[in-house]
Image 1 (cartoon, rainbow, N blue to C red):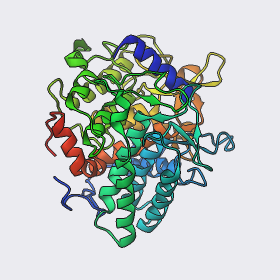
Image 2 (cartoon, rainbow, N blue to C red; image 1 turned 60 degrees about the vertical axis):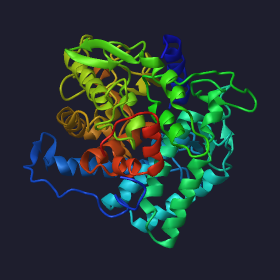
Image 3 (cartoon, rainbow, N blue to C red; image 1 turned 135 degrees about the vertical axis):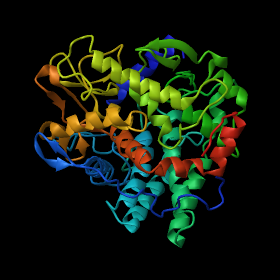
Length: 465
């Protein structure tokens, strides 16, 4: 990924303020482990609560974003929700966040937050909406109007298909397909629709007949943005799904030249004695925003996942540990940074005048703002470090815990400033990655899909799932 690419990506972010397919594996029966024997830990601000209870609470509260505060007509995920101003942008649906929401609803069923039938009905509502919404060579746009299903431009040139957001959505559709495929007649119909929706994406159209995937296409602006998908960042899932497609597949050369830059994705830099493994362009050696370790791996299981270039479990574990170590070192001496207050990623942020803004926080772009999604969504990679952060967030629950989980960002440096707002793309990974840590639910569903496994094989991946 070139530095120009990285800068363009961050600019785009700033616009948003925002086994085989044989019936084996998880299909809607409980996949939860037996409760662990734990001694509750006394909390400074209230009664004792065990780690398991705290994880339960965090998931249940975060789930409300996708259930209680979904866009009313479509049932899909709103781009943002501001509790103090619920009329702020109530009808903008985020496609990537909706993919996270699909997976989150499955978590809600498994954890008993909603009934199975309630989940089915909401998922039917969402897939009906997606079936009739604007698509561009099979790809959905970044944003849709939840009332009409029409595209809402993300920027002046971005008014068509967004292949990366589509990849995040498809990750969720595949999990829905697998979860309900052996259920009731209604559930099988839902599974079939989810499967049909994702198989309509024309991934190979987005290559421009070159050996790379490109992010955007619009009937008004064609490939004018011309943004090539190169790693390392959050877009790995897009290449794997493109290879997995039955009718619109890409060849391995597209992956090798595009995502992997013919091997130059590898990096030998270390920070805090920890190898970075891959080139985080513009963010070496301490790594980019932590969402890069989350978005592609909500369904794609990084455990034992490697290609001819790198091991992706090492990539994500090391990225998370470096982020944690940076906050412990705290070179800018921000208040409260340390082992239990850490996590830098793209999120809402504090502007210089104290107003709410947006920024892609990382060790190379640190303004003293901590994003709970960073540490919490990294819990499969850094379980002890992430639980320490969760304890800190919970200790400060009077400030940080709102109606849809922990608020998006805060800064102890500025009199404990809090962004009392939520983004779908930040709440979703918290809910999902905690579940993957606890039960492996979404990882197991996604990785059992026959087309996914064929795509991984086509690209030369090793995986033991």
